[in-house]
Amino acid sequence: MENSIHIAFFKSFLDRGHALHSLEYALEWIKEQNNRVAVSIELIPFNDLKNWYFDNHSLRHQSGKFFSIDGICVATNYGKVNNWQQPIINQPEIGYLGIIAKEFNGVLHFLMQAKVEPGNINYVQLSPTLQATKSNYSKVHKGKAPAYLEYFQKATKKEILFDQLQSEQGARFLKKRNRNIIIKVDREIALMDNFIWLTLAQIKDLMRFDNVVNMDTRTVISGIPLGNFSMEAIDLISTLNHHVLETDFSKKVLRSLAKDVNSYHTLDEIVLFITDLKCTYDLEVEKIPLSSLKHWVIDKEKIRHVDNRYFEVIAAHIEIDNREVVSWSQPMIKPVQEGICAFICKEINGIIHFAVQAKLECGNFDIIEFAPTVQCLTGNYNNPRSKQILPFLDYVLTADKEQIVFDTYQSEEGGRFYREQNRSMIVLAGEEISGELPENYIWMTFGQLQTFMKH
Image 1 (cartoon, one colour):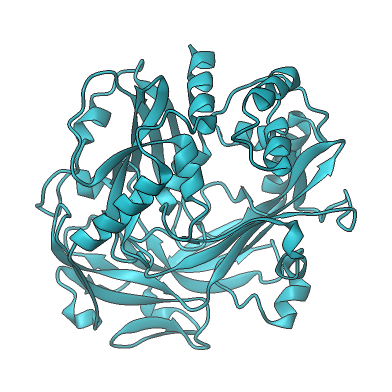
Image 2 (tube, helix red, strand yellow; image 1 turned 135 degrees about the horizontal axis):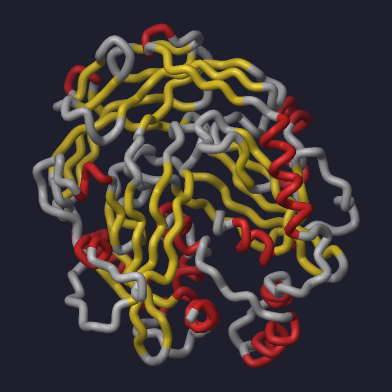
């Protein structure tokens, strides 16, 4: 059963000849969806927020649901800065990020939603079939239930292809987790106007365009298991699908998925690496009143750092005519600078390996999590001091064009973040990057990354 699921995912990952729609059609459809939705986003003073208020400690909703903006004091022995205070989003509910899958033309297709989030740069982006917090699907907002919710609530074990809890941006959320789930249905499904069936290959292709596929879709599909195949099987698959594997790099990454590759580290060595770091580093997070945060200022329209760095908390009045609730107001996080998320990879033992960072963020559920080689989401990464402090940052920013195999801008989650995008890159390194990495970095194959996505 498990192997057949992996094969179905893998086929959808590679097949571009049996999709219901062309990629060009999908792009035009997204454009049309954008033109059809009336959207109004107005930044307002905090006093004009409806149903939100400041209490002695936080900015919160009067229902006690949704989320709050809290203050925290952080102490850690990780990194160069060991103590700081900041606002953070406290959203303890576990939300659904769910995709319905169904076979058409013998290929698994995924039901994607053209959804407007208030913080999206270009309004409509491709989101999962279901993207809802518990407060949303419990209808605390007194609006309609999200579309297709019942398929997930009534899904049988046989229908569930993939089901994981994954964290969300530990620098801004306090121990936030989502239920990433994919279910497969065989019965007919009524297709609503703002939904479309796409293969996994098409979703991946759409990620080459700036800000088309939203963060929630990206996090769900990143965890899709592509199988536990031998190198011999991978090479055969690569040969049979040479027409869709457009570059040598694509073929090399596919080989990095194989279970019997000559990897730099074994899975046991990687487990020991992450376990040791979790035992080495401490993280203490104490909630404190927003009003007492050091180096942060609360004025009528924003909560900001005294140096105008990192991010701001703002308020917005929102009107979107195709949502469960068409008008509401809420706080949002607004970036001060753009960020960068980049993987450096290189061939080791003839196999592509990725330099993976074991990173501590104040909102992490379990102190340390695997992260890209470079992840500077809120800092001013262009200043010379940052380039010296952060490993590999200068290398990524000055990489030759021929080394850059992926380079787009991708949005953060638009329900909480206001027009925030990060530059997402993959850089292929040569001998100038040695096999020896700083102490909190480790080389991993694509297959090993897939394995650890299960945890």
